[in-house]
Amino acid sequence: MSPHVNGHDPRALLEAIQSSAAQVLTSMEDLPVAVVLSASQTNMYLGCPAKWGYKYISKLPEQRGGSLVRGTAVHRIAEAYYRLKLKSGGVPSDTSAFVAEVLEDVWEAGLVDASFAPDEKPDELKAQASALSLLYLTDIAPQITPVAIEERVTGTIGGVNIQGYIDVLDDAGTIQELKTAAKSPSAKAPVTPGYAFQAATYAQLEPRCGGLVQLTTMVATKTPKAVVTVYEVTGAGIRMTEQIYPAVQEAMKQGRVLPNRESNLCSRKYCSFAAQCEKDWGGTVKGECE
Image 1 (cartoon, rainbow, N blue to C red):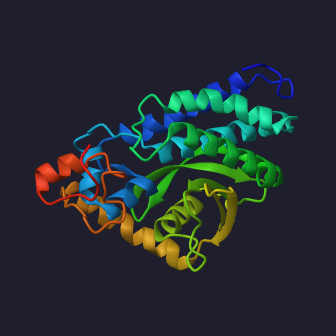
Image 2 (cartoon, rainbow, N blue to C red):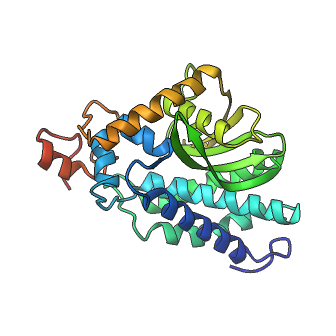
């Protein structure tokens, strides 16, 4: 990478990104089981207790599929952009060059522990990451002024210690979240129950948040597009976190780890633990054996 982005070396931005990523992994995965929860861990348990058990109790290795590699790359490029904007107040003079430079490094890093499905083409996914990032940095990011990036937040909800990481908090007190998807969110329900739970969690843990969360979904269709949804955290949403966290924590401590084969994500493509789950519980997980 060459040091010509507004006078700042992109490698310095990448070092900050890699440091924050390592901090997330350390704080979120190396804690004693069920002592401190997060929205993502809780949503995993609600989706499939067995999957949660394989990851957090058995600590089986989890493979990263192609869509996750693509999504991580888009996140890292956006993070590099916001860190530059927060540090200097400026933005890259050549957005395309900025995306290309940062992508080269973050993509290679993402391949280290990746496992692509037979129908996933790495070069195609990389091209999608580039196109989605360029669209995001051109159409969405310029309107956002960050005051905090990859911020660790902690607190207590329903008597349970909770922590998480917020992508970006802007100067209006809105939490900015970014995700990638293969298809557009449903027009009738653009915010999933799991994401609403996460938003209510973050709004309580970040005192500067005014209750609004903007979720930008970058959709990897033939013509990439951005779907922006502004979600307002409600009292009902907050009450749900207060009820769910202690109930889930108790279930985790009691070792309730039954599989949920009815989950849409119960498949060999989306779960690294499919083979072990079949061995332990019988039955068949969707998808062909590798």
